[in-house]
Length: 604
Image (cartoon, rainbow, N blue to C red; front, side, top):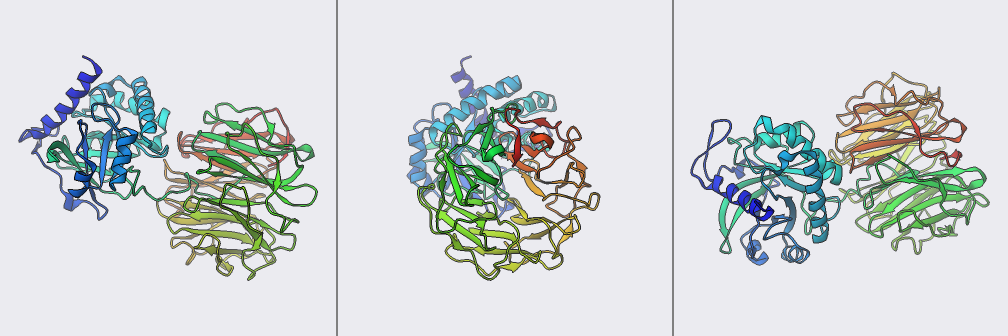
């Protein structure tokens, strides 16, 4: 049987099963033509269609009938194309991508998953789907327990290509339930067929009717029961800044090329970088970003997703001026270092930069020689910058560097910094830096901090958590679930370790929904504590890995959504940069290994 014949067979079988007045499912329950129950769904419900016919129902007809999205196949007679996607979007209809070719192909396991994902990814990209959107892969039969081993391998193969965070499945209740339970998918599109009237609440989509008529064409009706069900085009969900959930650092992830880039300061003020395009399996030789300036301090990097540009900021060695170097080819070449703006030039602290995906603007913050926190902005990918200006004069004697995060849900920037009196203060702007609130103390419960704050935003709970090292060497945290309107009392993360020498760095694993906090102990070991319930409780501090244990620098962390892997970097003794990785942030860490021995470093 040809692929086309197999494809047509799978479609007719889906409709045939649903059109029968009563279908016997694996549980022994009888299913009728329509077992969907829209009234049982959440308030977020929207109705849509899926079909693979040619010609398709016209977008105007679909919209006129009250449907606001389509789940479109990436292969077959009615396959999604760039022109058809634009037609849907132009009519106010969102698009969701699905892959189905041969009905029982998933039983071929891992290699089939790799092959299908590669084809689906190519077709979806050609149609204009953004890289971070999911694809649903069909299990178009009544899946039995004996099918699961091969199916799970199939979805492992898919995830190896497009990442677990972009992997979805279509199928009946049992299949969807088992794949969610085994963490093989993040997205579920459950059909009423083979479901016995049960719905898995983790699924974002439901297929509730088959073979209804829209514009004279037989189609299936679907229901979205989550705000984000993988759609793109019209009302795509709020951007989270390419998965950026913590303040920027000296490591950065490029979601377009799936590249981790790490920066470090070598002897003589030379700023080097190394990168990995395979999830950390190997690293390029250290190379100088640009030799035009000699630098000092810790660099800071941010990725501009619209300009496809990595921006690198660092202080000049001679005059403390804030410099910028950029790369638009994934770090292959870098522009000459240039002063961001000459209006301020004697910076005593390092930069913190943030990208606003809504205004396409980059904002850079730094501590001036007089203890004031200043900022400058660029709305044209760094071609020009506004004059440095004071964020807010209400506090002006800062002892620590600023750290900033953008909340895409409230469209608000929040800047944190340590005052000269050891208090942690914050200021906010809801108009992209046009004005700022007065500096205010985050919470007065602790007030003698010795280290700078770092922050993480949980995209699931919309909660900010701020961490800082107290004067007694303990790591504390405070949280806000209302975007900074109020804060919980500072509390110790965990008392199992309490003599920290460095500042904490959080990383959020979106796949495991876990915050991992890493910090350097007084004995030079890198420890970590984790919370799987958004800070309600924390695991005991434990050593990330004992293979290296004499660190001289604080850690930096990256979450790679394509591999669902957290990577932590830290500077060891002798100038060696090490890294360790955790596949899901809960199953331990790999042995520390040197990123690349080509340079020895003096700072990070």
